[in-house]
Image (tube, rainbow, N blue to C red; front, side, top):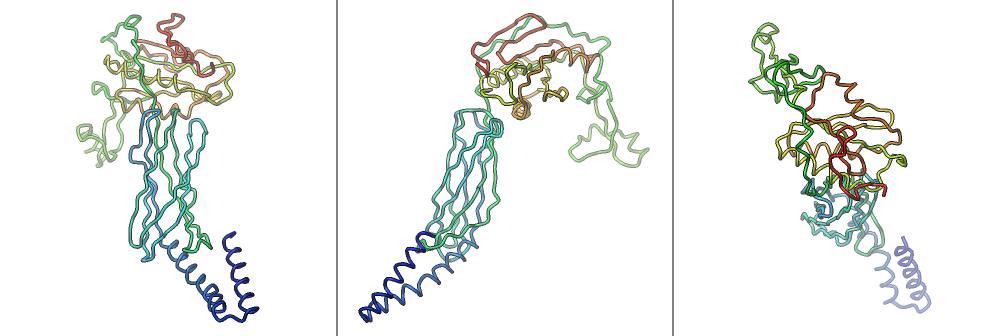
Length: 356
């Protein structure tokens, strides 16, 4: 708008000088100054209308402090080149509520698609939400700015950096093969016990089809297997802190340690579940960890969790919720990086307190 006002002032000055001095050259110049902006603005408007943009993240998961590559694709479907544009990209860490913005200068020749690559580096774990907030296109004289309607977003997960830990081998309960008990509430992968029979859903294995029930119901029925309660370890996450305000000031070291513990358990061939309190007034949540992908899913769930001020025993709540459970181990990891079994300290990681 400022450039447009200055241009109008220049036009009025040229007209004024042409009238005062009765100059044909100044008159012709004034006519050109009056006539040129309209077609230039029309071309800018058409170009802006025919622009197509797309925001994407090639790698959806990176380690903390590694660059996150964000790709902005701009396709100009008009025959006229777009010589000057500004794209505003915003990045927000969903876990920590931190925001940052960046402007990218773009150009796009006619009938061409141009890709712009920018990198973001996060020092903290969490899910990064990238959004294209605006795209402004200037005409050739920079007199008018046309906004392109955009609704593009992408996300990437910033994962913890594993550290070396040595998980305890002692304090394990012996696994009893006789009289093994099963979880009455959740299914599993033990084919020796059927948990439930339900209708077939896309993706179910053909080996799980219950042929007798299929013949009886005249539609495909599949078996859900049970989950043994014995032989599976439990890792409880104690997110209590007396000064907690619902926000993690610095949870990176704690997540680094948790990630490392889970990977160490997997390397040792452990079957285990991670249990934690979702909020002050909500119940326990749990997630089975059988592969590295499960660890990533667990971290994604914890990105939405928050510390709490009310002190309680996560182990006792788990025992009340699953009274038949006979885990091979029952550990608790607190916010100070201490691994407990009941009242026994098994392992400690220094400088892990998010509030220190």
